[in-house]
Image (cartoon, rainbow, N blue to C red; front, top):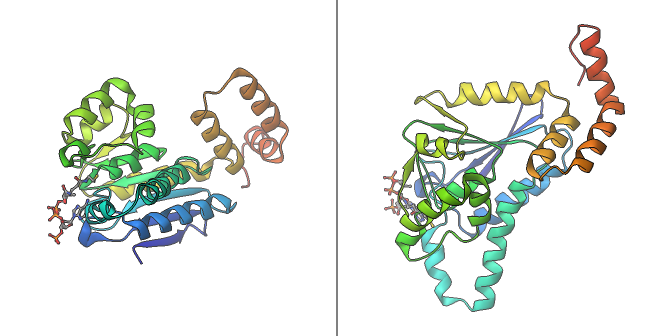
Length: 251
Ligand code: COA
């Protein structure tokens, strides 16, 4: 099994761990299928309020498994298209997950590993981590991840990194908005726990709705109907009442 799922904080936090450390957590068809299925399943579990995505060992994720990619030359165009669709479905499952997803990144996040950062809501990276869309150096392109990356880092940075294939460090990734927080070596967990406290302090339905508003261009109509529904909801009423009664909300 190349992926492990842990439950923490009474099941309210799911920790999804890529577990192919000997290959720097590169994903092949098995890992793609398991990661997709795991996120689709977690999306339906109402008790899960936050998800941490991480990779075991020296690197977060070295992207696509290059042996698997190479092997695809022996497959038909239809088979290659179906395979690319499965890869796209993996990124989409993470991107559209209703719960906040935090990526905990150390070592390297290259190719599809940078793509995983792009579809996570919050990215915390250890100093010295290398990012990069290195595909052109291999004669391929950052195709499936491109919409998510362009959305996150903007066209200017995407033109630069996609075409040069240069690796860039966590500070550079933070400057273009791919990384939210760069932490010193050994400090990833403290920052992740702080973020989990924050997610669990929010109303669960409100956090999911807030993520939806942040991800879609929140048209005025959607925004007004959203707050109108939230403030009369049981959760909204409890949060407002708790504030006024100077107590912690019960959720
Ligand atoms: N696919 C398949 N195998 C990979 C891989 C990938 N994307 N990335 C690393 N590996 C393998 C290496 O071939 C090596 O295998 P070996 O032990 O049989 O020789 C093993 O993982 C460890 O890699 P190594 O390069 O020795 O580790 P490192 O810690 O020094 O460096 C990386 C880690 C991630 C910086 C480096 O492996 C790397 O640059 N990988 C390629 C990443 C890439 O270009 N991804 C884009 C994919 S589109």
